Image 1 (cartoon, helix red, strand yellow):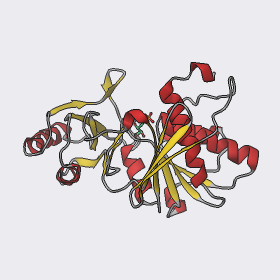
Image 2: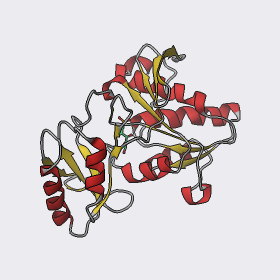
Image 3: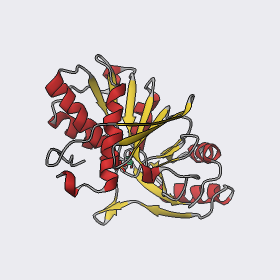
Length: 261
Ligand code: 5RP
């Protein structure tokens, strides 16, 4: 199966593998959502099942909970866990300040709550997510269903005064109907192309009553691991800067399980 993996899958796998180095016995671990996070969950499951690693996971979505449960990873809720040692999650984009756009997979609210309740947020990514300026990826914002069109109008007004390159808004859909998040909300995708001031935009959007959260994760990621198809992983740390590359062991042919999340 390794042969059928694209370069970006191999990069995601490598970053996820490097993230395992941060996981220590006894930790409470936030489990992110998306294809990159799924690689991490799958490899974490291997350590739990085959090497007796004792951790407890807190999933950030029903999708991740189902995947982790299928791998027999011990799970709890954030309410039970209280505070986590680390959260490992993917991203749709990250910039040089390690600010992120997240929510492409629709789980941004639980992801942000879990990451905010963690000592450390570790982001795993392939190289395609690294950008000079955030915004080419549409920015997801989670809004309550009630009055969502009014909320959308207020978002439009906020965008008029924002340092962005485009101002198109779309309601996220799935199978011809509005996409509904795990928390029962809608998602508006903001097509902005360039976000000049991520912190200012996040604050302005969060002041709108119907907006529950935005996919802008500003000053939240502590470390970003960028994986490459040759097994190299580049480490960027918010406090310590560019920590360079190291290599992780990539599995041989026919030995990869491709997670379905
Ligand atoms: C889900 C997310 C994901 O982390 C993000 O969309 C990246 O996904 P992938 O690893 O599949 O590229 O924020 O809400």
